[in-house]
Length: 112
Length: 112
Image 1: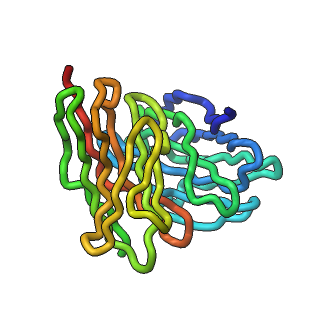
Image 2 (image 1 turned 90 degrees about the horizontal axis):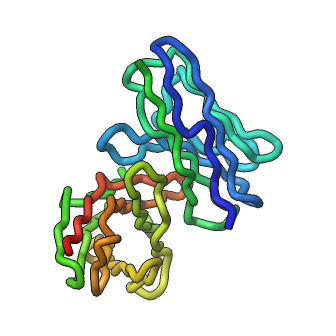
């Protein structure tokens, strides 16, 4: 079965650079969620989109922005990167009316 | 505030023995509860969920979980552990907005 696709899988950036993470949800899933998992931490919710509209917002820094496109894929844009942004970034998707979320493999971002 | 607690950082069991990974929650209203498993350098895999109905929920790979409303608990169980079950397990609760709030995670170590 098709799963959530995230790209790139690994990304190395320097401080103050920008990064763009992409997420392709499972076909026919209309909701996308972004989570950040720091080393040894539990995943923390950043932001979500339903039908291309922002549906909820968590602890997402102002330096980050995200959107969902007409094909339902989503991009997380991160600017002025800081060392503390080094983490595993997960995207999850779900279909309207479905409560469980299906996670992608994550993008490991390392900021040096 | 909605929260999830996993009181054990690590659980050690011998292969073939039953296992329990504990989870307690604090939510307003009726909870949607989940268990996810994370293998090293991998995404989170959905194991099972509780929405309503029977307090004993069966999920993937022989796992089950017991919902106890009076104790606000949702413990993960398996009658006979396998070495391949060794991983990081997260309990999560879903408020109305759809985002998942995770516990701190419990490392399960199954020894041969």
